[in-house]
Length: 505
Image (cartoon, rainbow, N blue to C red; front, side, top):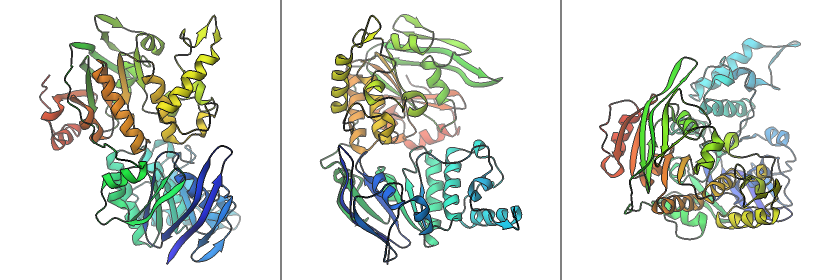
């Protein structure tokens, strides 16, 4: 029996039909992957099911009965829960307090703390959540916070769970832990929709797959069978997609960008320890490592966001130092790992975000006045070239999907033609078509002689694009090897501190 049937759903916005006569069904005890490029309509369709967005046409049935869902409260009352990309937790409250808020068991007029703790602990144990109910949310990893959100939904009695891009910010280990939980939920007859564009993960976890493209359902209820990553990519994009864009490097030049003896100490703790790295002109140097081993701090010192305790940076024969503005003026481009923290101002327009950090260039400003015509021409071209899905350049960047926000950051930096690129998580939250485009652009910039440092949690991405791969562990570079001379098993050993790797430059 179908837990959910959405029939002929339409959602029209002023400039775009986000959902165009879409029908979708979810069976009881099924994990169903809803695939599509950024802006294909995945999140909109599920927000309609969760009562966050009102549909213009269509009908919804839950367990065979037609229902009206006008708010998330209506959805929760019908047993539907949704975990969003950006969590809705109070950081200063405990795990248990976040889970029971507004649903507290009572003993007379008061909250029955003992009963609440017992109920939450029973759920944690039953579904293998491996989390401390008394821990403060602010002390949890991203993956653990996500588990709290899932627990919160289960505590409210949901039988249908929508997970919106649940793996976008998780480490590979956290993804595996999430999948264990999802399978356990399925065993307990929960029905799960996972909104994603990650194809390998879809094949690893889903029972069935549906694919949206430009607001239309192009494939529904596809059983896994013999379907491949390549098949799914073609369905999503509507054309042949090149997934592994490895291209031989024929034009590598001399060393162009160097960091020497770089250390960073914060609150008495050594974060970066004697980092020495060099990148040739026309080379992509990949950095592999498990999150939390110094990658973030390495990015920050390489882009002027933090001043190292010691060490020097050289571009060509010149030393670079100073703040982030100085690094930008020295043509060091930066794709930040967290687009919201470092990359965008969500309350500004797409147009304004496309020139952030470069707004005082002669191209965009004269005598303190913005050259609005030039900026508009630049913005419209960037939107077209980087396939940013938006009605106009004047939309607030915060209204875009996560992947389209990432495209704004990528477009801004790539279009300024930097000599050196510090690229962190370039395809995080980005669909397969845009990933293909970003990878091709990185290789194009490399072939034009740029020096590129690539930091990514996606090992396939690092191995596919890099000419050499350095491994960072506990704040130290423990190996540097040519990409074609190191396999995934060796990389995994280095990344976990299993052994030191011999460098071959």
